[in-house]
Image (cartoon, rainbow, N blue to C red; front, side):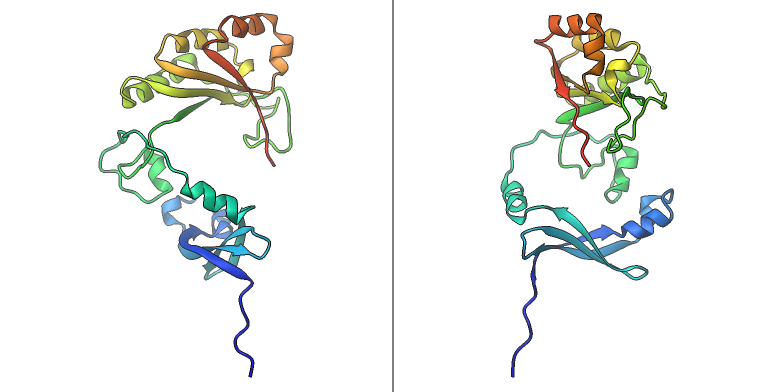
Amino acid sequence: MPGMPLRDDRVVRYVSAYCPHCHHEQPERPLSEVRRLAGYLSADAEGRVWLVRGCPDHGMVRTLYDESATILSYLEEWTAPTKRHTPDLFGNFDAVPQVYLRGLGELQTQHTCILLEDIELGCNLCCPNCFASSSPDLRGVVPVAAVLANIDARIARENGRIDVLMISGGEPTIHPQLIDLLDAIMERPIVRILINTNGIELARNDRLLAYLQRHRKRIEVLPAIRRL
């Protein structure tokens, strides 16, 4: 008599996760009120990794987690020393991810290795796969003073220096006070300054292009990649 058939997947590890259908039904509901579900990561016969969890309302929910179990395993073995961090609010032991609604919690394990500052909501392109959903129809400029205040707070928390600052958006090069902002940023103890841009404004704006060329030892231009 034949035995039980073998599974066609391999359990990588057990996890807890949210049901995306529960979240989409009430997207404005606080994450602390969304049901946490037991689940696991599963590698299929083709080597892909799936996040599987069971929801009492929506049944078994399966989502692609990684294209390659081999690469995922390799990346999870790669570790590096990290700096200590200072929590934004002491006593914040909320569960992930709602803990970040109150900044970095006490159980945060990483410091600010790359500080991302989105300074402009709009963009001079309208890419259908833009992860920021930016377009020429949107307007929203972050004041220079607000950006600098946030940077200064992070510098203080990082013991007086930030390794990498990325300026992004939307499209950061259309910010009307970008050069003034960059002048102020370069006065601060920041090792690398990156501008994440689609490059259109650089091709049109000779003043901005000359400015970036003049300060190329402090400021790097990073081509924006919009992933599906």
